[in-house]
Image (cartoon, rainbow, N blue to C red; front, side):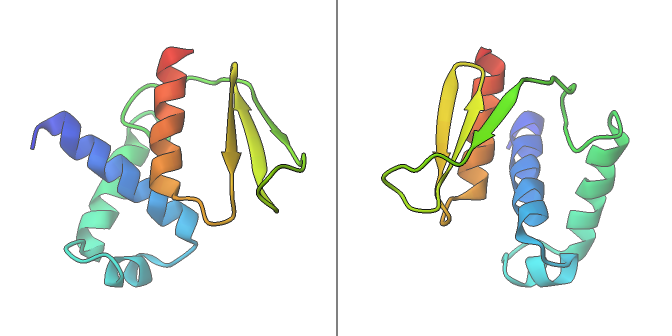
Length: 107
């Protein structure tokens, strides 16, 4: 695994951990092969880079969130630049993170 792939893997893991609302110990118990020590290491590593949870420089984009009704009940529409993402209650946080990163790169 390359350094970039490892950073991407941990960025996804950290995003998933942050969205879970669980403690480090609880989250690691449900993710085989990830120890609390590893997670703490990567949390510190990413925080120390620009003081934010990102391996890359921070870039701000306008984001609009609306509560419009759609085909999926209780869904959320998120606009990032010209793109619109519909987020349902059972969304995959890792996939959403990856989609947002791609959109940020394209905008």
